[in-house]
Image 1 (cartoon, helix red, strand yellow):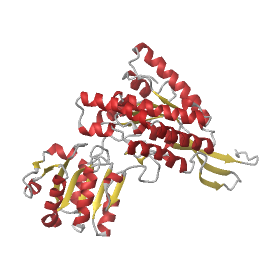
Image 2 (cartoon, rainbow, N blue to C red):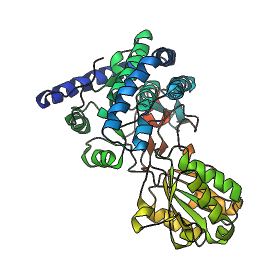
Image 3 (spheres, rainbow, N blue to C red):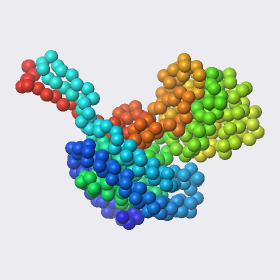
Image 4 (cartoon, rainbow, N blue to C red):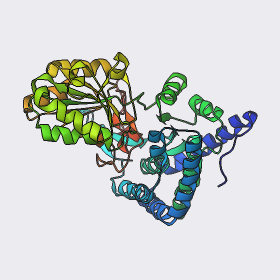
Length: 429
């Protein structure tokens, strides 16, 4: 497939309407597809990605060069970059998805009524999913695989900065569909970089799109939530917290904190704020701050935090509500569990928050009291990932409370219908 190009605006609407129509037709076929065919397609996609690793890396190099030429930040380039390990992770993720139970047709609940009616609540695909994403080319494979497994057709709109990588990966997905005898229109990549294509998707493509999933920065997600005329699975940002409780194992707290911030600072599950209980600050604050700084992280702290290391930068009020996506973290000393939870409620984004403590009662109070999509006890926030949850992969982390919350995997990409079986019953007047 040739590089995506600007399409004359007069043609964007017709191009996108055609994609929607073809996706809707493919969705009807996928809804009835056997699990065996879907799994064969996923296996073939994985093999195609491995076979095309060289071509994918070459395409990715073009995207990286363009990003660096535009002076994109290091975190952006990291999200964009593919290497042999990340390519293998994409292929392995597709195989993991194939190994999952097929959710379509799963009977969630069943019961009998006194009149003899047998009622079942059965999982069904959502239909056609539109996914708008920016600099993560691996989303092409993850989203395509998850939508296929859950019986949905998908229209993928990657950012212009990852267009070459996305096209190379999409070609592998199309090859897998073809080998399994499934419609290639089941996974379509928008062929234009024109921003008007996003607007058409947000309108729903004449009723073809059932749900939109944005995956990118705050400006993209905010636009989608503001303009979309179809349901949206989204989160605005990942302002994730680590709270080191008074009863924390400080060595464990250090390892978790450094991992949560520095493993990959540019992902939405990276910790952006560290809260340290005043009761353990004398012993724990300086080692925590020092470990972060030694790992290459800039620390922006309150007055207490500044007092333990001269390299700490004074925090501003805006730091507590900032998603850095860079090796930067804000640090604050708090007076106990309740103040920590109050801080998270005020400044957090209901994405992912963790407590480090050896006190089970404190852990339970945190896990029950913090209203986030993912809450953790004695574990890094970097585990906020569908693959780590055993979902094979994820399309994203949803922080809303309707339908999907947390990692969006195959089950979250289904709805349900009621199947009612009778033996001639009629309803009395």
